[in-house]
Length: 252
Ligand SMILES: C[S@@+](CC[C@H](N)C(=O)[O-])C[C@H]1O[C@@H](n2cnc3c(N)ncnc32)[C@H](O)[C@@H]1O
Figure 1 (cartoon, rainbow, N blue to C red):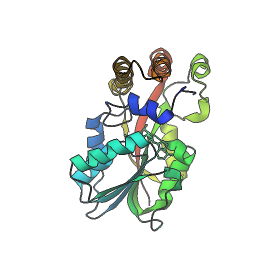
Figure 2 (figure 1 turned 90 degrees about the vertical axis):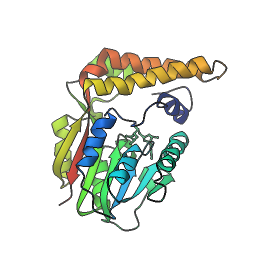
Figure 3 (figure 1 turned 135 degrees about the horizontal axis):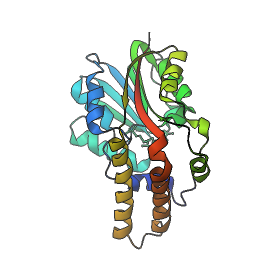
Protein backbone atom coordinates (compact mmCIF):
# COMPACT_ATOMS: atom_id res chain seq x y z
CA UNK A 1 0.00 0.00 0.00
CA UNK A 2 1.38 3.42 -0.96
CA UNK A 3 1.00 5.55 2.16
CA UNK A 4 2.03 8.77 0.44
CA UNK A 5 4.38 9.60 3.32
CA UNK A 6 7.31 8.11 5.20
CA UNK A 7 6.23 4.63 6.32
CA UNK A 8 8.02 4.79 9.69
CA UNK A 9 6.46 8.16 10.47
CA UNK A 10 3.01 6.85 9.53
CA UNK A 11 3.27 3.80 11.77
CA UNK A 12 4.95 5.85 14.50
CA UNK A 13 1.96 8.22 14.59
CA UNK A 14 -0.79 5.60 14.23
CA UNK A 15 0.76 3.45 17.00
CA UNK A 16 1.43 6.31 19.45
CA UNK A 17 -1.00 4.97 22.04
CA UNK A 18 -0.24 1.25 21.70
CA UNK A 19 1.78 -0.52 24.33
CA UNK A 20 1.58 -3.84 22.52
CA UNK A 21 1.70 -3.13 18.77
CA UNK A 22 -0.41 -6.10 17.69
CA UNK A 23 -4.09 -7.04 18.06
CA UNK A 24 -3.67 -9.03 21.28
CA UNK A 25 -4.49 -7.25 24.55
CA UNK A 26 -1.81 -6.50 27.13
CA UNK A 27 -3.60 -8.84 29.57
CA UNK A 28 -3.48 -11.78 27.14
CA UNK A 29 0.16 -11.02 26.39
CA UNK A 30 0.90 -11.14 30.13
CA UNK A 31 -0.99 -14.43 30.38
CA UNK A 32 1.14 -15.90 27.61
CA UNK A 33 4.36 -14.68 29.24
CA UNK A 34 3.27 -16.52 32.38
CA UNK A 35 3.22 -19.77 30.40
CA UNK A 36 6.79 -19.48 29.10
CA UNK A 37 8.58 -20.81 32.22
CA UNK A 38 11.91 -19.43 31.02
CA UNK A 39 15.05 -20.64 32.83
CA UNK A 40 17.15 -18.36 35.06
CA UNK A 41 19.79 -16.70 32.90
CA UNK A 42 17.94 -17.76 29.72
CA UNK A 43 18.53 -15.96 26.40
CA UNK A 44 15.60 -14.37 24.58
CA UNK A 45 15.42 -12.73 21.15
CA UNK A 46 12.44 -10.75 19.84
CA UNK A 47 12.67 -9.75 16.17
CA UNK A 48 10.64 -6.62 15.29
CA UNK A 49 10.17 -5.98 19.01
CA UNK A 50 8.07 -2.83 18.67
CA UNK A 51 8.16 -0.87 21.95
CA UNK A 52 9.78 -3.90 23.66
CA UNK A 53 6.68 -4.51 25.76
CA UNK A 54 6.84 -8.27 25.31
CA UNK A 55 10.54 -8.31 26.29
CA UNK A 56 9.89 -6.10 29.32
CA UNK A 57 7.12 -8.43 30.52
CA UNK A 58 9.37 -11.46 29.97
CA UNK A 59 12.31 -9.83 31.80
CA UNK A 60 10.04 -8.80 34.69
CA UNK A 61 8.69 -12.33 35.03
CA UNK A 62 12.01 -14.22 34.58
CA UNK A 63 15.72 -13.49 35.19
CA UNK A 64 16.53 -13.63 31.46
CA UNK A 65 18.86 -11.67 29.16
CA UNK A 66 17.07 -10.38 26.09
CA UNK A 67 17.76 -8.80 22.72
CA UNK A 68 15.18 -6.81 20.77
CA UNK A 69 15.58 -5.91 17.11
CA UNK A 70 13.60 -3.02 15.65
CA UNK A 71 13.99 -1.17 12.35
CA UNK A 72 11.73 1.85 12.86
CA UNK A 73 13.64 4.91 14.12
CA UNK A 74 10.52 6.06 15.97
CA UNK A 75 9.65 2.74 17.58
CA UNK A 76 13.20 1.91 18.70
CA UNK A 77 13.21 5.20 20.62
CA UNK A 78 9.91 4.27 22.30
CA UNK A 79 11.39 0.84 23.10
CA UNK A 80 14.50 2.40 24.68
CA UNK A 81 12.32 4.66 26.81
CA UNK A 82 10.14 1.74 27.92
CA UNK A 83 13.16 -0.40 28.86
CA UNK A 84 14.89 2.43 30.73
CA UNK A 85 11.74 3.52 32.60
CA UNK A 86 11.28 -0.03 33.86
CA UNK A 87 14.92 -0.34 34.97
CA UNK A 88 15.64 -3.19 32.56
CA UNK A 89 18.45 -1.67 30.46
CA UNK A 90 21.02 -4.03 32.01
CA UNK A 91 19.07 -7.09 30.80
CA UNK A 92 17.46 -5.95 27.55
CA UNK A 93 19.72 -4.97 24.66
CA UNK A 94 18.01 -3.11 21.79
CA UNK A 95 19.44 -3.07 18.27
CA UNK A 96 18.24 -0.69 15.58
CA UNK A 97 18.57 -2.88 12.49
CA UNK A 98 16.76 -5.12 9.99
CA UNK A 99 15.71 -8.28 11.80
CA UNK A 100 16.51 -10.35 8.71
CA UNK A 101 20.19 -9.38 9.04
CA UNK A 102 20.57 -10.39 12.68
CA UNK A 103 22.69 -13.43 13.55
CA UNK A 104 22.89 -14.64 17.16
CA UNK A 105 26.41 -15.21 18.54
CA UNK A 106 25.92 -18.99 18.34
CA UNK A 107 23.35 -21.04 16.38
CA UNK A 108 20.79 -23.06 18.37
CA UNK A 109 21.58 -21.02 21.48
CA UNK A 110 18.36 -19.21 22.44
CA UNK A 111 15.81 -20.25 25.05
CA UNK A 112 13.11 -18.28 23.25
CA UNK A 113 13.09 -16.72 19.79
CA UNK A 114 10.04 -14.68 18.80
CA UNK A 115 8.72 -12.54 16.01
CA UNK A 116 5.29 -11.06 16.66
CA UNK A 117 3.50 -9.44 13.76
CA UNK A 118 6.35 -9.04 11.29
CA UNK A 119 6.69 -12.32 9.39
CA UNK A 120 7.64 -10.40 6.22
CA UNK A 121 11.09 -10.00 7.84
CA UNK A 122 11.67 -13.70 6.98
CA UNK A 123 9.41 -13.66 3.86
CA UNK A 124 6.40 -15.35 5.50
CA UNK A 125 5.14 -17.38 8.49
CA UNK A 126 7.01 -20.52 7.37
CA UNK A 127 10.25 -18.61 6.78
CA UNK A 128 9.88 -16.97 10.20
CA UNK A 129 9.38 -20.24 12.05
CA UNK A 130 12.28 -21.85 10.15
CA UNK A 131 14.65 -18.94 10.90
CA UNK A 132 13.68 -18.73 14.58
CA UNK A 133 14.00 -22.51 14.96
CA UNK A 134 17.61 -22.41 13.71
CA UNK A 135 18.50 -19.88 16.42
CA UNK A 136 16.80 -21.81 19.24
CA UNK A 137 18.38 -24.53 21.38
CA UNK A 138 16.77 -28.00 21.44
CA UNK A 139 14.06 -27.81 24.09
CA UNK A 140 13.74 -24.04 23.61
CA UNK A 141 10.68 -22.04 22.56
CA UNK A 142 9.65 -20.43 19.29
CA UNK A 143 6.87 -17.83 19.32
CA UNK A 144 5.24 -16.21 16.29
CA UNK A 145 2.37 -13.74 16.02
CA UNK A 146 0.51 -14.08 12.72
CA UNK A 147 -2.84 -13.17 11.16
CA UNK A 148 -5.14 -15.88 9.80
CA UNK A 149 -8.26 -15.95 7.64
CA UNK A 150 -11.34 -16.80 9.71
CA UNK A 151 -13.31 -17.04 6.46
CA UNK A 152 -12.32 -16.65 2.82
CA UNK A 153 -11.73 -12.93 2.23
CA UNK A 154 -14.26 -11.08 0.08
CA UNK A 155 -12.75 -10.39 -3.40
CA UNK A 156 -13.84 -6.75 -2.93
CA UNK A 157 -11.66 -6.57 0.20
CA UNK A 158 -8.67 -7.99 -1.68
CA UNK A 159 -9.26 -5.53 -4.51
CA UNK A 160 -9.52 -2.62 -2.08
CA UNK A 161 -6.35 -3.50 -0.13
CA UNK A 162 -4.36 -5.09 -2.96
CA UNK A 163 -3.71 -8.07 -0.66
CA UNK A 164 -2.99 -11.57 -1.94
CA UNK A 165 -5.36 -14.20 -0.47
CA UNK A 166 -2.35 -16.50 -0.03
CA UNK A 167 -0.56 -14.05 2.23
CA UNK A 168 -2.23 -15.70 5.26
CA UNK A 169 -3.37 -19.23 6.05
CA UNK A 170 -6.06 -20.49 8.40
CA UNK A 171 -5.58 -20.71 12.17
CA UNK A 172 -5.10 -24.49 11.95
CA UNK A 173 -2.86 -23.95 8.91
CA UNK A 174 -0.56 -21.63 10.89
CA UNK A 175 -0.11 -24.44 13.41
CA UNK A 176 0.54 -27.02 10.68
CA UNK A 177 3.30 -24.84 9.23
CA UNK A 178 5.07 -25.01 12.62
CA UNK A 179 4.69 -28.78 12.74
CA UNK A 180 6.04 -28.98 9.17
CA UNK A 181 9.26 -27.27 10.27
CA UNK A 182 9.61 -29.78 13.12
CA UNK A 183 8.10 -27.83 16.03
CA UNK A 184 5.64 -29.07 18.63
CA UNK A 185 2.68 -26.79 19.38
CA UNK A 186 2.33 -25.79 23.04
CA UNK A 187 -0.30 -23.05 22.99
CA UNK A 188 -2.20 -20.49 20.90
CA UNK A 189 -3.44 -17.14 22.21
CA UNK A 190 -6.15 -15.71 19.92
CA UNK A 191 -7.33 -12.08 19.70
CA UNK A 192 -11.04 -11.45 20.30
CA UNK A 193 -13.10 -8.90 18.31
CA UNK A 194 -12.67 -6.53 21.28
CA UNK A 195 -8.89 -6.90 21.09
CA UNK A 196 -8.96 -6.18 17.36
CA UNK A 197 -11.26 -3.18 17.78
CA UNK A 198 -8.88 -1.70 20.35
CA UNK A 199 -5.86 -2.27 18.12
CA UNK A 200 -7.55 -0.64 15.14
CA UNK A 201 -9.44 2.08 17.02
CA UNK A 202 -6.31 3.36 18.79
CA UNK A 203 -4.82 3.95 15.34
CA UNK A 204 -7.81 6.01 14.12
CA UNK A 205 -7.81 8.10 17.25
CA UNK A 206 -4.04 8.73 17.15
CA UNK A 207 -4.14 9.73 13.46
CA UNK A 208 -7.08 12.12 13.92
CA UNK A 209 -5.51 13.65 17.05
CA UNK A 210 -2.15 14.13 15.32
CA UNK A 211 -3.86 15.81 12.37
CA UNK A 212 -5.77 18.18 14.67
CA UNK A 213 -2.61 19.01 16.67
CA UNK A 214 -0.30 19.45 13.64
CA UNK A 215 -2.36 21.24 10.97
CA UNK A 216 0.83 22.60 9.34
CA UNK A 217 2.50 19.19 8.89
CA UNK A 218 2.53 18.56 5.09
CA UNK A 219 1.99 14.82 5.77
CA UNK A 220 -1.38 15.29 7.46
CA UNK A 221 -3.40 14.82 4.28
CA UNK A 222 -1.66 11.54 3.40
CA UNK A 223 -1.85 10.39 7.02
CA UNK A 224 -5.61 10.86 7.20
CA UNK A 225 -6.21 9.42 3.75
CA UNK A 226 -4.32 6.19 4.56
CA UNK A 227 -5.60 5.85 8.13
CA UNK A 228 -9.24 6.32 7.05
CA UNK A 229 -8.84 3.95 4.12
CA UNK A 230 -7.39 1.29 6.41
CA UNK A 231 -10.23 1.95 8.91
CA UNK A 232 -12.86 1.50 6.17
CA UNK A 233 -11.29 -1.77 5.00
CA UNK A 234 -11.32 -3.07 8.57
CA UNK A 235 -14.91 -2.01 9.27
CA UNK A 236 -16.34 -3.29 5.99
CA UNK A 237 -14.43 -6.56 5.67
CA UNK A 238 -11.36 -7.16 7.86
CA UNK A 239 -13.32 -7.28 11.10
CA UNK A 240 -15.31 -10.26 9.81
CA UNK A 241 -12.64 -12.29 8.08
CA UNK A 242 -9.28 -11.63 9.71
CA UNK A 243 -8.03 -13.28 12.90
CA UNK A 244 -4.82 -12.94 14.83
CA UNK A 245 -2.96 -15.28 17.18
CA UNK A 246 0.29 -15.95 18.97
CA UNK A 247 1.61 -19.45 18.28
CA UNK A 248 3.91 -20.93 20.92
CA UNK A 249 6.00 -23.93 19.88
CA UNK A 250 8.73 -26.05 21.44
CA UNK A 251 11.76 -27.17 19.48
CA UNK A 252 12.26 -30.90 20.19
C1 LIG B 1 2.91 -5.07 14.00
S1 LIG B 1 4.32 -4.33 14.74
C2 LIG B 1 4.67 -5.49 16.06
C3 LIG B 1 5.64 -4.97 17.09
C4 LIG B 1 5.87 -5.87 18.29
N1 LIG B 1 6.33 -7.18 17.91
C5 LIG B 1 4.61 -5.99 19.11
O1 LIG B 1 3.89 -6.99 18.93
O2 LIG B 1 4.35 -5.08 19.91
C6 LIG B 1 5.61 -4.72 13.56
C7 LIG B 1 6.97 -4.13 13.94
O3 LIG B 1 7.95 -4.60 13.02
C8 LIG B 1 8.90 -3.56 12.83
N2 LIG B 1 9.65 -3.91 11.61
C9 LIG B 1 9.19 -3.86 10.33
N3 LIG B 1 10.12 -4.34 9.48
C10 LIG B 1 11.18 -4.70 10.25
C11 LIG B 1 12.45 -5.27 9.96
N4 LIG B 1 12.80 -5.57 8.70
N5 LIG B 1 13.30 -5.54 10.98
C12 LIG B 1 12.95 -5.23 12.26
N6 LIG B 1 11.76 -4.67 12.60
C13 LIG B 1 10.89 -4.42 11.61
C14 LIG B 1 8.02 -2.33 12.75
O4 LIG B 1 8.73 -1.15 12.93
C15 LIG B 1 7.03 -2.62 13.88
O5 LIG B 1 7.51 -2.12 15.10
